[in-house]
Amino acid sequence: MSHIEINIRSKTYSAVESATSNKVIENLKLTLNTNEFVCLVGPSGCGKTTLLNIIADLDKAYEGQVLVGSNKVPPKIGYIFQNPRLLPWLTVRENIELVLQEGQSVEDIDSLLEVMKLTQSQHVYPERLSLGMSRRVSIIRAFAVNPDVLLMDEPFVSLDAPTARQVRELLLRLWENRPHTVLFVTHDLREAIALADRIVFLSAAPMRVVSEISVPLLRVEREKEACIDQFRQQLLNQYPEIKRLL
Amino acid sequence: MKDYRRYLPLASSLIFLVLWQVLALYLNNRALPTPVVVAKVLWLECVSGQLPFHLGVTLLRLVVSFSIAMLLGCMIGITLGLNKKLDAFFDNWLVIFLNIPALVTVILCYVWFGLVESAAILAVVINKLPNVVVTIREGARALDQDLLDMARSYRLGRRKTLVQVIWPQLHPFVMAATRSGIAIIWKIVLVVELLGRSNGMGYQLHLFFQLFDVASILAYTIAFVIVIQLIEWFVLKPLDKKALRWRR
Image (cartoon, rainbow over all chains, first blue to last red; front, side):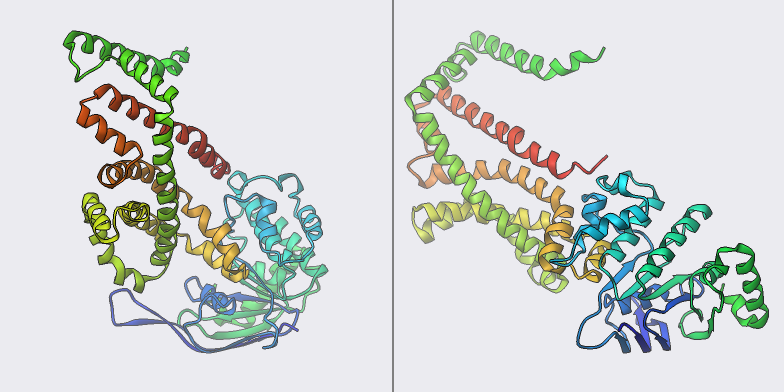
């Protein structure tokens, strides 16, 4: 079980050499069900990455409570950062093997490399990879730990459209084979519609939930651009307040 | 063709030797023996076993004090680099130790602990330690926070994080501390031997100084420089090459 309950009363950053502090998050309440794919959409700088860092336990300086899974067993978290954060001194394969827990099988890595079309590059150092390839490696690394929760922070930003689409499809294929709770940050509404069970719209800082919208489209329907565009238009007509958040 | 560049270091060494020979012949003074004389002394000292013995003793002191200084220096440097409060507290101590002259530390160690081997090693370690700490601390301050966050989010654990994430980032700083360390330490070891030991290069040099035996002084110096150069070629360079193989 890996549902997430978020109840953050406030999160502030102190401005450098100043007594004032910036409130980034205020009264944010959000619940994610087990194996649900949720996309967070909000203007840049609103605090989405901060929220992911709080869930990943990288940031503990906030008021409130974040519950991931049950309290007894700490959940396994796969975090795909905005930049791939691969260790440049380890090869592709070594980067992936690094995050495996003791006793965890390495056989999965072969199939993940194959799905992501990186088998040929597994013994290459990251400096020799393109950005798209590096992002795919970071996705494999996140899946290799068999995560209960997957956090993704705009993982396709700065990729060209065909590459982003290709990696997105590969990601969905992996997720459908091994479902788990996903929190995906993006500012691209089309991308959110293509991926999410539910889209959560967030305000500018201090961040709070503006609206939550379920995406009723079937996965096959989402493969068609026209279908996604139509749903997007429908959303914008129905919820005009979300226009300023994009 | 630029092949001749490969022979430039050899050519410059030969020219240096020729100039030295010409100058020594011209001056014809005991204060500057010819390279041929120095080479003869070097050979005789090697054959007699004197030079290998004293060189070996000095190298042993160098290796022991260098290892202790590097190990402690890395541990303290990483700790200070990652902990701002400790760093602020100990910063003044570092500045003080950095500025104490080597000779003072050596004399004090001998006065306080006697003319014993451990006092000699301690004096060298105290002299070198602040340099290592400062260099490694800079490395630890410059660690990539993104990579450390990655390690934390994937719960890599302390050992994996240190070996796989932190240590490779510190490598250039460790190599800088190693190179400057070897260069400084062997000079301090000679002072330590000169002042309070009855063997080693420093002791021998002191003896030759009293006998005004410049040829032996130069012969011992050349032997030591050759050994240090061999360490650079066969230990440090291969280490560098292995650690940086991922770079384009």
